[in-house]
Structures are given as structure tokens and as C-alpha cells.
Amino acid sequence: MKSPNFTYCRAKSIPEVFELMDYYGEDARILAGGQSLMPTLNMRLSSPTALIDINHISELKNIQEQSLGLSIGALVRHYQIETSEVVAKHIPLLHEAMPHVAHSAIRSRGTFGGSLAFADPAAEIPAITLALEGVIHVCSKTGERQIAAQDFFHGLYSTALEHGEIIRSVLFPKNTYSHFVFKELTRRQGDYATVGIAIAAEFQGTQLIKIRIIYFGVSDRPIVDNHLALELMNGRFDQENILKIAKFAGQEMDISSDIYHDAEIKRHLLKVMVKRALLDLLGKACNGAI
Amino acid sequence: MAQFENQIEVETLINGEVVHRQVSSRMHLGDFLRIEMGLSGLHLGCEHGVCGACTVLVDGLLVRSCLMLAAQIHGCKVQTIEGVVESGAAKQMVDAFQKKNAAQCGFCSPAMILTTLEIAKKSIRPTREQIREAISGNYCRCTGYQAIVDAVEDVFDQKENKQ
Image (cartoon, rainbow over all chains, first blue to last red; front, top):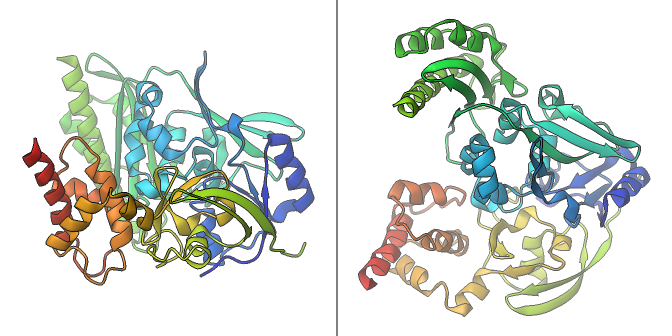
């Protein structure tokens, strides 16, 4: 189908975005990569009065090494992250996840900030940002604020962003995680995850000293499993214990179904994925120690 | 506030030709190229970014033309299958598609050729599995993909035989 009518505005600076947002009000939408917004328009699922195109604002397009970590601008496109050496070096988990983000024709246009603002619960970028405790820098005409990833995702397509605010960049703080695992189960390469898992862990020798486990595609937002992390920290990090613990992964969690899978199947698949991911992590940790 | 369509001025390079037009805000790039420019090689299937039939190159990158507004190509370089074929860059792939019978109804073929040309740029020969992954964003309802993967492999065979 074709999109409904709207007014298109090309913003050339951040202040101009705020002016346009003021003028068109709450029914205006920011057009970044458009890879989720355009389908909703073409399918008539949304009908904004205006689209404010931010693609010409160059200050949103940078990947920058800063003293506190690596900053990724809201308009950095998926293919740029996928091919960035700086990202591969500083955020290996993100680098590993990028080929799973849709298809190459989507990665050409899709943006980092767009993926966060859209907040699809089965998307990779929100999950990785949560796993690595990214800090989302947002700005409005009245100023700027920083939102920790764990406070950013409020639910299905819902975030802490308020009207008049846009994402400027995301800071990935320097951290001490040494090992990462990213896995997702999809019907077709590039689809949204049925069940996905991202792990960041730190070892001393073969001793696990810190671990962060994120699931996506199983709830209305990416979720941290602190319970499983604690279990793993308290026991020995070996195959026997992993097989034992993985059976209880997501047990207490409220898991939601999607159009293809009901919640119980997802719960089962989650356990399978947790087992695979942890065994993978064990393999990586052992190899590193030899 | 009522919803109004507006006209936007775009200056762009399409298949090497400078194009200066007024476009409607709600017109997507696929419609613009087909209706306004008469470039009907790209096909519109789903119009929500799933089937891949409308793929074109924008600034050298594969893009779904149904998910980009015509208004957004201002200052960009667009290449469609027509331009790529004319440049000669697709010859080997088109021949391989014919040889391996990788085009049946032909609806997906222009976009499939643009996508497989990207795969053919790789220096290391991909496995059949990797080729399938790389074309997974393009639907084909005829071939079962087997023949398309054969065609891509054929291009790599020829490259290796030359060396």
C-alpha cells in the first residue's frame, strides 16, 4: 500500500528539529533510517502529520572514542557499525550482533538511534545496549539528559523519550568484560529474534567473576536475568553446573507470546538458547586460559 | 492538524544522469523511479521492506526503494538494474542466471541480481549456506533459491578458473 499524506520537512540542524517538532506537535515523527517507520506508514498503521527528516544533520553521524568510552551517534547506520574497526575493537559484542540485524539492504539505511527509539522487544541493538550498560544521551530544546539503558526501555515500542526529545548519541562505557556471546533463533536470517541472548562476562583465569545476561524477543522489552547471573556466580562454571542451571532459565519470568510462538514454546527455546550460549562461553573462557 | 502533502525539490543523479524534479512528500523512491523515471526494472511487491523486489543502489549501497522517500534522494546517487546492466557490471551474473535457469517468472530477478552482485564482490568464496543467508532478504517464489545459489557459485567458478 501507499503511505497516507504527510508534510515532509528536511531539518538541517538540531535546533531546527526542535522548531519543527514545536510547530507540528505530537503527531509529527522523526524520520531517521525509516526502516521501521516507512513500513508502518505504507501499511497505514500510523499517520503522522509531518515527517521531520534528520538525515542531513552531520553531527549525529559520528563514532567517537572518548575518555569514558565509545560514543555512537544516533544517525550512524547499521552497515557503518558492522564495518567499523573501532566498534569491533571496543564493542566486540555489538560487532558480533550486527550481521543479525535485518538484511544488508536494511542495514544500509537503518540507524542506531532509530532502533533504540523504536524499541522493538525482539531487536538486537536495544539488547546489546542494555547488556553493555550503554548510556543514551537525549536532547530537547530545553537541554540534555542522559538515560541509562536499564531505564530507557519501558515496554512494547515504548521508551523513556518524551515529546520534544531526540536521541543524540549513545555512550558505551569502558568496561572490564572479556568474553561475549551473542545468539539468536530466527526462522530466517535477518528476521527479528524468536529468542535471543546476549552475554558479557569477565573471567580471572577460568573463574567467572562477573556476568550480565540479556534476553530479547521473549518479553515486551529486552530483559536482564540477574537471577541466573547470581546462580552462575555462586556455583562452579563448568559443564555440569551449566546444564543444571540452564534448565531453570526464565522460570520466574513473565514470557510473552508472538504471532508465531506461544509463551511456553518460547520458554522452552529460551532454556535451549541459554544452555548453548553458556556452553559457548565456557568454551571461549577455557580456550583463552590455555 | 490536518495532513498535507507537500512538494519537495530534489536534485539527484540517476544512472549517471542529473535529474531535477519536484516530488510529492508521500511518494516513495520505488514509485518515483517506476512512474516518474520509467525505470520499471525494480518491482514493487510488498511495499513494506520484506520481499526485497524493489532493491536499488543508493550511493553504492543496496536499499529498499519502498522504504525511502523520493524526497530523500536529494544529493544522492541512485543506480537501478537498468544502469547497472548498461554499465556492463552485471553481465557475468546475468549470463550465469540464464545458464543456471535462476530466473523463472523474473519478478525477483533484477533485485536478486543486484544483491548477488554484492556477494560476488567478496574475495573469499562463500559457502552455499552463506549465499543463502546473503540473499535471504530477497524473496523468490519460483526457484526455491537452488538455481540462484548455483548461479552465484558459477560466477565464483569462473573467477577461480581465470586465476
